[in-house]
Image: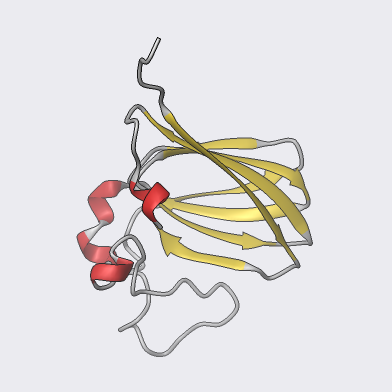
Length: 131
C-alpha cells in the first residue's frame, strides 16, 4: 500500500584526530555508532537551550558558544557557562549512543575515526531533506 514510512537518513563521518563537531542539536532522534577510533562526547539537555545561545536563523541548531578543552580562556563571554550541567563520555569502537532530538551535543575525535549515524523521525518529511 501507499502508507507513510518514517524518515531515515544515514551519514558516515571520517576524520583525523582533533576533528570537532561544534555544540549543536538535531531535529531528529539520532544513534551515533563508533566504527573506528575514539570520540569525546558532551551532552546538554534541551532545558539548556537559552543559556547555550543558539545562532541566528540559519544556525538556530548551533550554539554561538564554544567548548575549548585545550585552553582555559580568560574571556567567559563566548564560553559555555561552567555551572551548566552536562554529561560526558568516550565513544569507543563498537559503541553506540542514542541522542534524542533536541539534545545539545559536542563531539571531538581523540584519534582518527569513522562513525556512522542514523537520524530518524516518525514524520514522512524532514527538515533535513531540504538542506
